[in-house]
Structures are given as C-alpha cells and as structure tokens.
Image 1 (tube, rainbow, N blue to C red):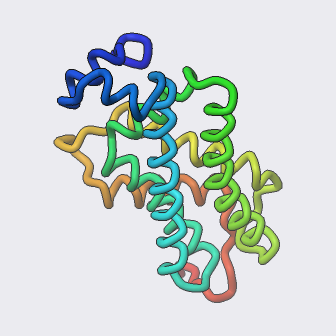
Image 2 (image 1 turned 180 degrees about the vertical axis):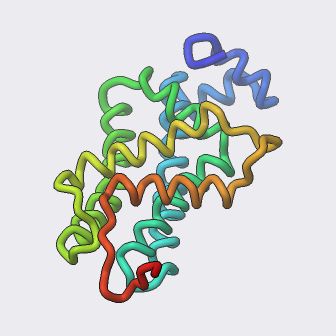
Amino acid sequence: MGFYGASMRQLASRTGLSLSNIYNYYPSKSAVLLEILREASSAQLAQVQGAIERAGPGVVERFSAAVEAFLGYYIDNPEIGTVATSEFRYLEGEFRSEVVAARDETQSVLTRLIAEGVESGHFGTPYPHEAALAILTMCSAVTVWYRKDGGLGKEEICQRYSRFALSLLEVRPTTTRRRSQ
C-alpha cells in the first residue's frame, strides 16, 4: 500500500493494536516510518561493522565483508529493504535528516575502507566517496528483484555483488597474490 496508501487506522488493524494505542507511541505515520528506518539503519550498520571486525586485517577482505553484510541485511529483511529504498522519500525535516545521517554513517564506513585501499595501493579508484555511494545503491536495489524462492541464494548473491563492488574499485594485483601462469 505504501506510505500514502496506508492509514494509521489500517496500521492499527494490521498490528492488532487499537488506534489510540498506536497514537500513544507514534504521533504520525512519519514517526512510524522513522522508527522502522532508525532500527533498520542501526541493525544494518552493526552487521556491517561486525563483519569488518571478523574479516581480518586485509583491506580487500574487510571491504568485501562489509559489502556482503550490507547486502545480506537486505536479503534477510526484504520488507525492510523495500521500505528503506522506496518509502524514505516521504520523510521530511528532522525525520529525514536523522535517516540521512544514519545512511551517511554506513556510507562513511565504506568510504574509509576504500580510501584505505587506495592509500595502500590495493584500489585504484580516484573517487572513494562516489564509489561507496554507487556500491550501496547497487546493493540496495537488490530488494527490487530478490525473492527467497528465486534461483540464487543469499551467499551467492552476496559474493557476486562483492565482486562487482571490487571491480568498481579497480582492484590492483599485489605481490602477495599469485598470478595465473
């Protein structure tokens, strides 16, 4: 139904709560949407940061883990991903600013990893900020076509998208990698 298609009365009915109870906690549909996006952004960022910490010291591995975790969150939570990518546009003012700040925080994590990779010679892109934005946008768009009963599983999709992301960064071979003979 989307943001404008659903009323607070319908939200109450679908959640099994009274309309007055919903209004007790959320003064508007925008406040409900903000809470959904606030929780999703926080959980997704925590998933990304945890994946980076577990990935080890290499920047390529940490970056790949971050991309896979970001995308994995949307694959595990397709409804949230759809709301995050399609309904965000209805937020205004402080609510919009809060969600933008949360999204910027996740983008900043990727931007820092990319900049680190450029500095260490692993990545060749001259545009770390824009590359991070493009990669997050690419991953977020998976919510448009992904279905749990589709032909590709979560792990395969995450690995493919990580590879696409690394291609965007112009990964450079290092002396520690073996070249095919």
